[in-house]
Length: 536
Ligand code: NOJ
Image (tube, rainbow, N blue to C red):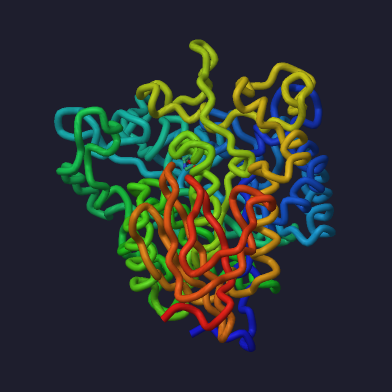
C-alpha cells in the first residue's frame, strides 16, 4: 500500500516520458528532415509541456533502410541528424530544464553495412562470422527453417558468395546479431556504456524479446488466431524465433551495465505481449527490465469494462515491487485520435496519465494529431510494401508548430507531408486556446506533478457502466477520483458524496460542482477530489 511518507523511489516512477521521433520533430538545418539541433530549438516547448524525460528514436549513423533502426555505428551521430557535440548540447539544455534523455538501443540487429556484418559476410572463416546468425540451407536448398520476417517474407536471406543463409527478423538489410556469442555481448554493452558515459538517463531497448532464438532453430508453429488480411508475419507464433526464457539472464546482465552508473538509469523494453506474459520481463528478483512497455491499451475494445479489466489483470499480475507502464501510441502504430476521434483521444490521454504507472506519450498526441494519408508515390516506409495498412509513414509525419509554410517544421519540403488536417492543429494555435488539446494535456501533466496520489498512489476500479469508468488513486489518506465518459453521449457518475472537480478534458471553463450524482458531457473525462471520505 502506497504511503505518502515513503520515499518516492527512483525518478522514473513519477516520470512522464515523451517519445521524440527525431526525423519528424523539428528540422534545424533546412534539409526537410528533423535533427538534434531541431530538438534543441524546441526544449522550451518540452519544458512547458511538463514531461520529465524524452526518448529519442535512433539518430546513429545508418543507411536508413528502416529509418535509423538499421545502425551502422553504435557510437556516433548520423550527419543527417547532427554531431556528437549537438547531442551533448541537447542533453545539457534538457538537463537544465529538468528533463532527462533516454536513447534508443537497437541490439537485435545492425545494418548490413555495419563493419561487423561486412566482415562476417566476407567468408565462413571470418573471425566475426559467428557475430551474426548463419546457417546452411535446408536439404532442398531453401531457408533453414520457416521463420518469418517483419513485415513479410522469410527471415533468411541466402548469401551466394559463402553458401549460407543469414537471419533477419526484420528487413534483409537488418541482419540479426548472435547474442549467444560473448564477444557480441561485450561489444554491445560497451556501446551502451558509450551513451551512459554521455549522461543519458536510460535506454529503450528495441524488440527486446527477440534477442535470443531457439538454439535448435525449430520451426515456429502456425498461429491459430491468424485471419486473412492480418499481417503476414503474424501467420506463425514466434515461440522459437523469439521469447526464449534465457532472455531474462541476458537482460539482467544489461541491467548490471546500467547499475555501473549513478542516478538510477532506467531500462525500458519494447515488448509486444499480453500483460500476463509481459510481467515476466521484470525478472525473477526484479533484476531485469525496469519498465517493460505495456502496449495493451492500444488494442483494447475501448469500453469502461475493458479498461478496468485490463488494469485489474495487469495490477494482479505485477510481481511485488514492480512498477507499471502504459503506452497509447508510438511511431509504429495508428494515432490515438484516428482510432478514437479527437474528443475521445483526450479521454484516452487522461487515462494514460492517471492509471498507475509511468506513461509514455508519443509526440503530437498532445495536439490530437491524426494519421495523415500519404499520397501515392510519397511512401517512404519499407513496411508499406506489405500492404497500405502496414505502412507507418502516416504516423511519422512532421510536427506542426505554427501556421507558416510546412507548419514551421522545416524551411524545405519535409521528407513526409505534414498533412492539412494536422497542419491546422499546430502547437502555436493550441497554446492560445485554454480549451485546446495541448492546454488540456499541459494541465493534466501539471496536476499529476502537483498531486502525488496521481503519480504514485494505489489504483482501484470503482465502477464501469453505461459508458463511464470511475477509478480512484489513493496515497495514504489522499484520494482522487478519475471519471471517464468513453462514449459520445452524456454519461452519469454516481459517487458517495460531492466532489471538487480539478480537471476536465473540456478545459477550465467546464469545471463545475460535482454533486454525488452528476452528468459528464459526451467524451469528457474529469479528475475529482471527494469532499468527504472516498467512496466505500
Ligand atoms: C521496433 C521499432 O519501433 C520499429 O520502428 C522498427 O522497424 C523495428 N523495431 C525494427 O528495429
